[in-house]
Length: 199
Image (cartoon, rainbow, N blue to C red; front, side):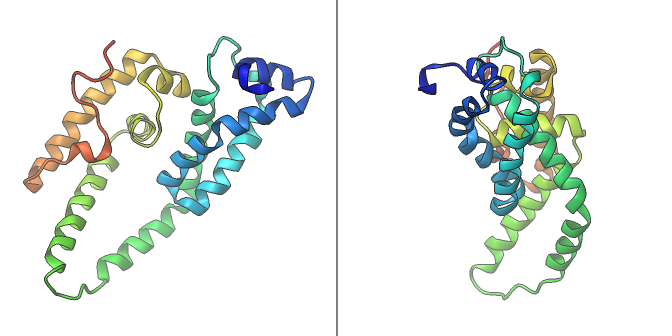
């Protein structure tokens, strides 16, 4: 029954009848989970995805009725929860990273390509970590979800032009950083080309 009704209609109706929120969950859970799983891992992603909808349900009265879809709103909540999760687990990740650095890799014909890939991944991670937190959030929403530039702007409550200009700048920063490693694999993180997402 909720299939032909917009997210805004369902959310508005859920203020009177909470069960009306169920189709919103059904429509968007998989995309929210996919974004979070790629960002924080499948187990934490499942927990956080559920929490997204708990938060959204609790704050449903704040949803802007002129929005066509709840996806940007939900992804904005997901991005906030992912940031909070990252803050609480940062020390653990650093400890694991140090342990990985101490690992001994068995040397065989596969070892060198694995090490090259690990170096490249490390360089890419380092390049992304050097971005400002606001820019990194834009990049992660673009790379790990299906949101368009206008939807990312809606999720983060910034102008669409800001999203485009920051993506353009980040692409240059990451590309320049990666050039030190002899190869440029910016496309691996789904950064747009200059002609993508026309304004």
